[in-house]
Length: 438
Image 1: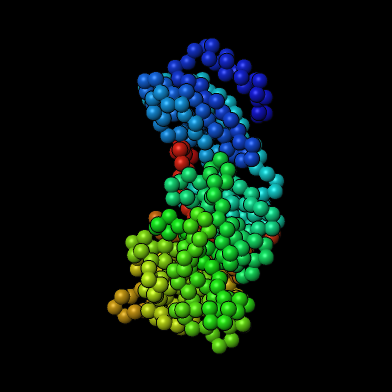
Image 2: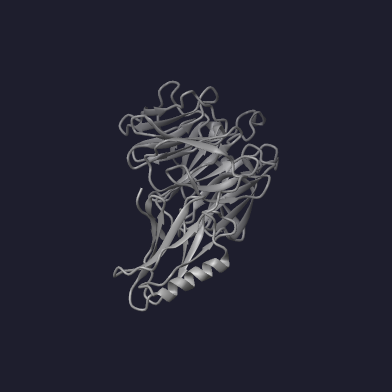
């Protein structure tokens, strides 16, 4: 279906209005930059709530939140599929409806990295991640594997981490300079509304890999710092810093102050190489993964270690050859931990360990390896679903697997040659709308 020219749209709306209808007509405005984004606007009913309903080729697709009486509504229709014919109407709470207004979404840009999807996803909602190739994009995928939202980043920059804003109004992502060394470099933490407009930009020097929202409104970031004793910047260690909206930073933790560097730190790109950061709301602490030390440590508010998993000083004992090795992202569980384990070559895997509080033993109870084996030299992510399934991201191989609790592969995204995938976050929904139907 071709998009109607503006004059034709006006004529259609005038004809509808002249015919009389029991609900106001929506005006549908496509976004200039995001092919899947259309904004619906309408005049509120003076007596009752209204909302917009959108049908696709297979029937009902999404509905907007109810809008208050008399309120003029402006609702971004998030989650639409690209290159699809749609129709929208405004309905009242008592069952009145306007005539259907047809519209179409366009094809996504050809510059987006290409990928394919096989199988049927067992997860619901959406997945926020990034595609990395000649140009990186922050994207939102639906369970069919279709891109329903995207934003291209500055040329020669990379996005390892993107997160949903706490109020749901958009996304924030770390755009790292192309002179990146082992995942670290000058970064811009950009805040972008769903309409694609940037609302904030905080520059963080020596940023490395990951950030997370801190409870006080600042951002907690991994950042590299030189040896404070010598000032030697060629042998960086890691720190966790809090950064505010002006770029001011406060150090929470330093590897130099809490760990002992190896005797020959120059043998490593970064001797601690922190690459994953989470905030534990219940415990009020941060969890930090350090690849080169094969350990994941809890950082308490005063900068001391709490629980320690793997490596020297571990609170848990692992079977011979089963401890995490060069791990990346992880998910702390109530009775253990889920880890993306890079194994220092050969193959990567997702592995779940269960902790025995009485003996201090950490036992591997679940493992997933891609068939055939993949080895991921950077990044890598795991995310456990409520049904026990796991999304496993083999980042530099450009593969995301949806794996059932019994280890069965249900769904797979595979990027074309040269396409990598960043860390991901599952979203229950998108603001202002609800997906209905299949």
